[in-house]
Image 1 (tube, one colour):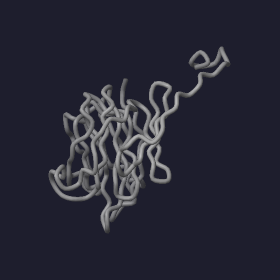
Image 2 (tube, helix red, strand yellow):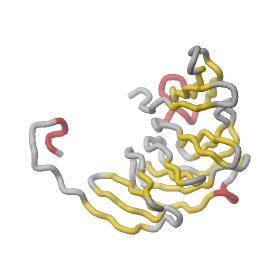
Image 3 (tube, helix red, strand yellow):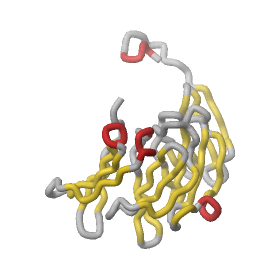
Image 4 (cartoon, helix red, strand yellow):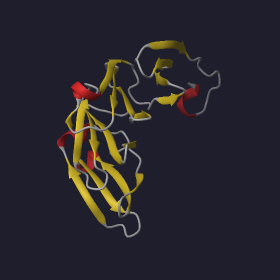
Length: 190
């Protein structure tokens, strides 16, 4: 399938960086100088092989964390160096496709065939499971990245849109979306 994530732009301490997830190609994250195209850093990790999600940036106090979800974990990295700052539980499937979503300093990850979900406060150092995990639950959303709005997470999967309270993980509402009656276009009108 190849990598499916989008590049992201980071205004670093000294340079503007373009950060690329090359999970399928080389089990790596790369940062390139946005002006010259030169490689600034490369981080290799076997866990990146099952990742198709786009990393996200979250500001915590006076620092920025590069957050990426990998099978089983969430990682907070230093976007200037590519070094791991912290890690937490993530979804338990053998792949991640949905990108992490942020509300303030809280990161939300959903996905996997089992519908695992986790909310984690960004920041910290090392293993932050005891200090930063806000909630863990079940929010099916294997491929689609959740949308955050007004304190809620909206997750779409298998024709069902579900709204969750972002701070508790409790389901607020769920609705099955109607299929399109048009035929002949991409996807056969579904």
